[in-house]
Image 1 (cartoon, rainbow, N blue to C red):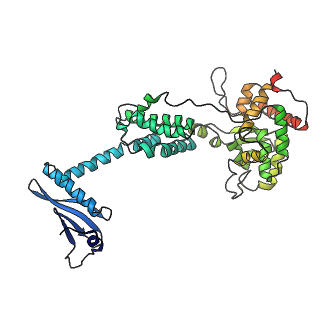
Image 2: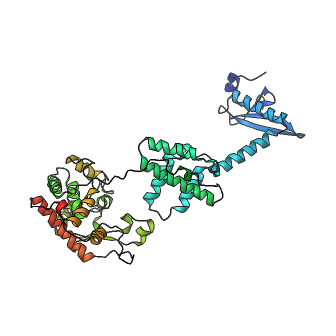
Length: 414
């Protein structure tokens, strides 16, 4: 008699061996193991040999599903195909497809071809693929990947307004495809057919205040900040130092020599390639007398720890990357008006257009790649005396703005 779901559900292993194999017909049966596991099996004969085909484990494979598998196996037998060998072939194909899937090859490319990138850059690329590509095309054999498959992925990103992310994802998918071509697992990079399919990225510069009168108002607002003292110091130091927000918030006391007025940011904390971080040396930031005064005040509070600006939750980490921006919001400056990164644009603009500092000196202080007329990169101590003078002039100029001195509008500065 055919089995029933109730009979299967209530079946238990019998130590004396009887009743541990329940037949359902068509040579399919349920085998009950000593552990209590229940296995679907089907006996069959092919080319004069008796064989057994595994059909799955109950309850993962229900009675109805097992019968369907049995019927499919009987159809193969009628067509002269060994269902056991067909199952093995299918598993081999699935394994090969998995090994040559877009996700497998993209991860292989990422592991082999990104060691020169910074850890943060590598993590962002992998995260981008994991979130926006792998769920949709990760399991597809890369040789079967077609332009519409990739375009569907990119359109999902585009629809949420992340146009720049869509372009970056397009580039990353293309890099993985070209790696597959180079390793003989794909015929071509299908992303080349999608050039022009995405709208162009609208470049948006970091919000920054560059008009001297507005800078004066901002500096006076910063002096009136009512938050914690470390955050107040971070706000006051940001325009004086104009380094990248991440470099300032993670600054460590061991990097500072207040007697000589110098801050040396280790290469591994700079925005560089991995090789640049390892071999580029520290970035030297001369400190104005005003900056040293603020740092000595702060040192009395946080100088016994590692960081200038420790997290409010633990001294083992610096403050979060949103702290300065959050403080600016409390002062009434929204993200479209001023950001922590905007102090760099503020300094670059006014140093050039108002104070007349040569661009090469400014760029060197901003830690941008600067080369001489022969194309040689300047060393880390390039223009150091000039930069020290510039940093003091800049601090004095900011003091004058705060005091309400007459300022030269940028529009008329020559």
